[in-house]
Length: 227
Image (cartoon, rainbow, N blue to C red; front, side, top):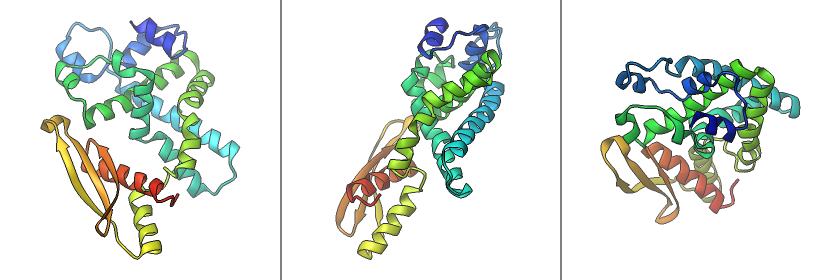
C-alpha cells in the first residue's frame, strides 16, 4: 500500500518507514499498541519549516513585491484549507492510519488532519531525499496554486474585502444568513448566503459557519466581478 502511495507522489523513498510515520495519526497508536513507529507530529513540525522556506524562497526570487504582500501570498498557500485541499488531491486520505473514531469524522477535524499529514510527508521527503527533492515536491504540489491565489485574490480576507467593496460601490453592508445545516455534531456542514439588502448574491458551504461565510464572500466577489 505505502509503496503505491510513494509511486503516486513520485518519490523513491530509501526508507519507506518515514512515509509510513508521516501517514500515522497519534490516535492510531492508541488502538494499535504493537505498532512500531511513532505518530507524525514530529515530522509535521519539520515539514512545516521546510514548506515555509521553499515557498518563501520561490516568491522572493520570482516577485519584487513588498514584504507585506509576499507574506499574504505565502499565508494563502500554506494555510490549513489549502493544504487539506492539496492533500485530498494527492489521495492522502486513502492511506492515513487513524483510529476508528477519527475515521468517522470527516468534518473540520479531518481537514486539520489532512493538512498536518501533508506537512509530515514533506518532512519525510526532506529527511529521506534532502532539501532539493522536498522543494521540487512543494513547487509541483503547493506553489503551483499561486496563480489561482493571485487571480482570485485568495490572499485577501474575502469577508473584509467583500464588505469594503459593497460599501464603496453600493453603500450597503453585507449580511450573512444560515440557509442550511446538516450532519451530526462531529461532522457538521453549513450553507450560508451573503445578502446585499434583500438580494442574495452568493452561497458558500463549509464545515464551520465561518468557513461557509468566507466561501460565500469569495463567491460573491467573483459574481459581482469585484476581484
